[in-house]
Image (cartoon, rainbow, N blue to C red; front, top):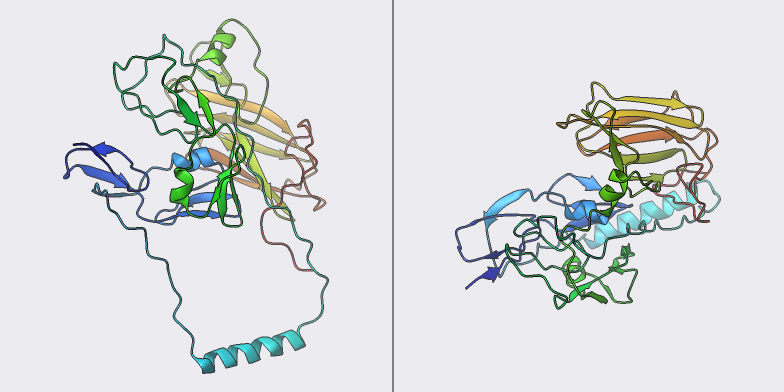
Length: 340
């Protein structure tokens, strides 16, 4: 009889107890807008990327795995407590007075990208493919008949993690543990599951139709020579500190030797070819919301993205990254506030 593995990052149905299980032994970590697992180093900004972090440990499947132990600090003695309290009082008396720090608003999750409601019948669905909708854990079995009786229960909203509570923007339920969050029942039901989508965006490009620019789009076209795929836009995200804006442009396999990043007074020029076969290229000029210091700005190319650190010329808050983005009235601020 098939059983479901409870290891984080696995969750597969198995019948062979000796089958290799790849999973995360540590708990999830959510800190200052970044997401990852305590047992390994990758940190990402969006929840969808967090779910795609590859497991770091091999072992055997389990249906009774215990949660990781909570780290506890060794209890302090009464003398140590008294000494610590005395030192803190002394510091408080001798420390110069300073103005209170202005609290910064907590970062909010970016809105989810619009999803197609149906799978394109002509597209092949891989065996074991999971439903793309949040909160639905259904998987496709090769040769499975499709109908409007599949009943896909999912969450159309974005995940929300705030002050220890976890939930979705589309419904009111909040929980404390990550395992409980993954089990929150979907609040919306669609007739069918969504395994591969409709491919409508590719159809629009083939027909010569335009695709609107957005930070979650992935529009592309083929170059005149037919050997290079030109990307019109890639998904991007950002957060900031009082002095710096840290922006990420998500593109896998960027060729570090051929890529160019130029910082200008209020613009960022990017030319990012990839090492794919055939290669892709993202070339654009990003108009920035505020002025920067090009000499102090820097960048680094990682396995899945380009990360740029834009040093603010005036130290003001940026409500958006691009000057042509719609203003939301909210200033995203993440990081430790400066001393005053």
